Amino acid sequence: MEQNSISVASKYIIQNIEENDKTLNELKKSLLTIESDKMDKANIKNNIDTVLGFISDFVTNFGSLDIGEKKNAIRLIFKEIVYDGENLRVKFF
Image: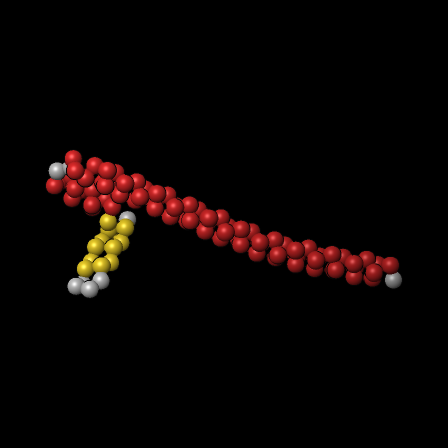
């Protein structure tokens, strides 16, 4: 009888360990996803700050730039500019 109750207790403990291990692995995956998203958002913020810096420098120095420098600055700031006669779409780098 005692052996049987130890066996039942062992099975219960093993089952709980397996369930907790599964939960732990799911939480680890969730944490990795959250950390990845956080890094992506930080990179996006950094890219926005860089583009804003380029725009600020461009506006500040516009009068002193020659046409070639203006073209190069615009290429650094904008990925694509499309005007279809009605709408202007701008994509930044």
